[in-house]
Length: 364
Image 1 (cartoon, rainbow, N blue to C red):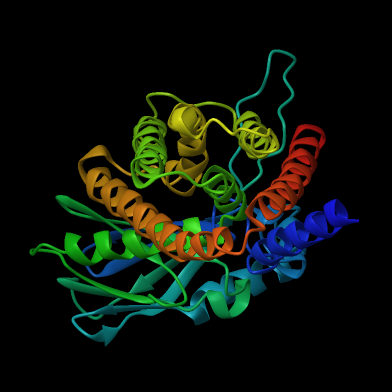
Image 2 (cartoon, helix red, strand yellow):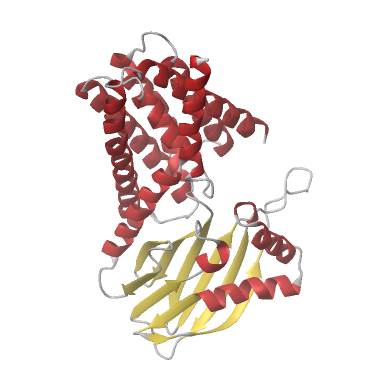
């Protein structure tokens, strides 16, 4: 019965991690929209690409209906953008006028058929009273799409491009067309990176599985550093479109990595000293998973560096918070004399979750 009690305790631990993030997707920190904001004289065009499969059921149904050509659904969706996105020029509100819904047409295959596009783009033009010199954007779409929604925005102005991540905690940005507005954009991506790791329960389970066997300060530092270096490399390669792997494959291998580190913990003598190698190898895969929050945005290379740096720094800060919270708890556990049983129970629970995620991602 002791083994089962330990397994139950481990399941409680793992379930609590998942429950804290049950509203969020594994890698995007929830649903994500990709906005392109284009400036031209006294007009601002706001285009928002959305994927129905990632949004709440009611919104997803509206997007599917709009894609099928239902006029009332299109008007409701465009109304959300018109009402929840505020555009200002020099502090004075710009008024929405022309609007449209766009469904991209994929290229036809050899047989002449093509798969239906997955995304829908909502476009609204805003008319300002004078040419835009200082642009203000406020995004309140979270009130409609849910608290775990984000808008990753690219702001295109003559001669410059700025990126910004809108979140429920960071709803506004201001860009001076003649000045430097990159600082606030980078800070927004740092916040997004922190939220991404803290709401990515599969990344957290992998990290917990790595830390469970314990070890000295040097061994743990090597594990964490190896994971950091590895995912930083592949995150950069993927976002820069130098190496792009199928998302389904990456998601499945990430789930398998969770199961693998948990399975190794079940041995009587975990090889802590070489665990940094495992951490590095699977960290390469997790970097591709992190990249999904940025790669689809189509950021230009001259502006991408700051966004990528900010997002990666946020991931590291979030990871440091998790490690700082976990290590004292593990140290206290070692002093109770029940460390081995709790490591076994927690690892078995993580193994079961990893295998379940693997099966789901392979066959879904």
